[in-house]
Image (tube, rainbow, N blue to C red):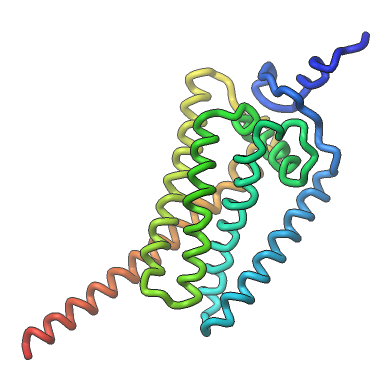
Length: 232
């Protein structure tokens, strides 16, 4: 029996199984090629960014790694997530590298294929606010700017808040509807859904602690100087 085009387009791997994904076309590129191409792209971007910024000042290894973290965030927010925001209507049928990566990741969170209001809103804010702020933080670290820890706190808190909203809304939706957005396989749930998002819990938490400690020390030094000046 022949199926019409509409039926073919509804054959997709996403959960819940009955959801509609208009115009869906399976990825034509193998996963290892997609992942490899994306990895090479990121590494080239980070190498170029670090080379450009590190020549400004002498930096510690820890500062260089922190710069890499914020450059990575800037790249993902502005370009990868920016692609989603500008192309979500045509994502299901596209064979663009970023589109195929989004379709692959959406097997762990089909809200990206459903184009939910929450997802579109949080991604838009991430692209226009957190992306530029991530690049600004990397520049501030490279230049030993006095506002480095201020912007680092802002970006880190925003990342933690975003992760809380991301998981929180998903859990609430699943409990209310009784249907999950992720496929149950290990790759999709534990690697994509849990593993890929976990760095945005641990790294921002560490950076927030680092900045809080630095700000505390700065205030302590300022208070001691004020006391010394009062005694004169």
